[in-house]
Length: 80
Image: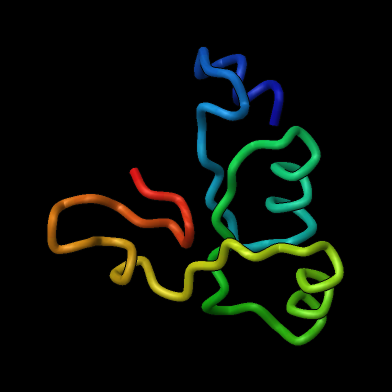
């Protein structure tokens, strides 16, 4: 995650990571304090429990729901 941030030329808090795996995506973003959105459409019970234990609250169920009428993008509680 640090490598990706460095390659993009941004600080971790200036990017948003979107992932569908708690272990491979969201834990990494949390580890460097990078804003994240967890895509939960295919989440299983184990991942949902782990997310609750980690306090993962920024969840996205549908990419279509991220597109607002005013043209902005909303990734859970993050607005672009």
